[in-house]
Amino acid sequence: MWYNSSDMGPQKKYRIVVDTRMNLKAVRERCSGFLRYATERSLPWDIQFSDYWESEIRNEINTRVLKWKPDGIFLNSHYYALSDGLLQGIPNIVAFGEPVVDSDKQMPERTAFVGIDNNQIVAEAFRLLARRGLIHFAYVHPMARSDSSELGYSKIRANEFKRLAEESDFDCTECEIEAHKTGDWAVSVVALAKMLSSLPHPCGIMAYNDKCAREVIDACNHARLRIPEQIQIVGVDNQEEICENVMPRLTTIEPDFFGVGRLAAQRMEELLATGHAQSPITCGVLRTVERETTRDLSGSARLVTAAEKLIHTHACQGLPPSPRGLTVASLAAALHVSRSLLELRFGNVRGEGVAAAIRQRKLDEVCRMLKETDLPIGEIAERCGFPVQTHLNALFRRTFGTTLRDYRASFQNPPPSYTSTHVGS
Image (cartoon, rainbow, N blue to C red; front, side, top):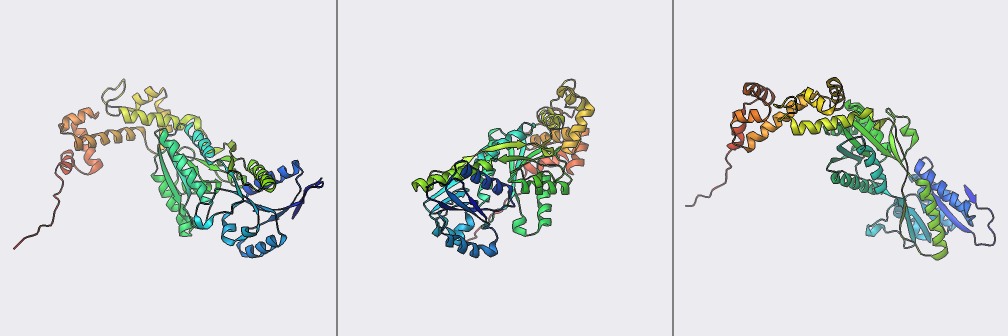
């Protein structure tokens, strides 16, 4: 397929190859941006599209491209081109992606790089999830493979997402999808479902891209995790065939791929004119498309998060009107909601009752004080919101299968450590 710029004039005509994979939205838009720039500026370029992604015909395409003797090439991915030696005969190269740092995979000197601002993409995703009142986060991406350069982007996003969470004093877990390792989608979904179930809920998840986010949705469905009550998900790319045809529909960050294509054409124009490659340049986010996977649910996540904070701080000391341990009623009053609404929202998000969460927090504090202090058990019970010690005795045995005294003794009298001794003659 050929594209011929009109109004060429007396200028030299340049031959440009555009590496494409038209079944991907991001590539289509980058190619569109590239062509639009050339058209608007009436550049003297003959452009040939080369679908370089079909591995079985790469050698044939290499021969065809090099026989044409192009002046430049725009690569939508430069990994395979490096591997197959295509670039040795092309003088000017513009590549989408990050410069390859491996010494045996260096791009030729006259290569200009264009890309997307991964930090801005991550910041948009994180801000969206944080606005929902979430304090638990996770980043999900495919397991790294040696034959993929795209996952370098994923690691950049993972590190930035975790950094933003840590700066805000939130926890963040990095999860890898193992499909590439196992080769079995069913096994991968089960493994991911197990990881997602182990996360604290509600949890905000950023996925590497929309395809990855769809796998997160599949895993949530398998684990019977409710979206968006327990898990909220943001993808990247806005591939509508995925985002609009999955249940629930996927919220996503759409990078400015069209703008990247325009930058690529601009860099090619500069290369042809000067022979010098400029420093890498990036485009940011075009828009955030919100759908059901991050629906606010009238503040459910914010309400549950606020309740969790009060439970953590006041489970033992209590809140008015109950100074001896927190109750569901006093918690609801402090949050200015009805008891029934609090229990409904808390159950939908956490999958357990408010009273159970309060009880578990009080028991956690009992365990801590048994391990770390020498206070009498009766005083520990009083401090942890159990005015009747016999109630605590029965609850502790039922929960942990041991008595309070035996639990304390197991930490005060650890088993002896044995060392080998040498008996001399």
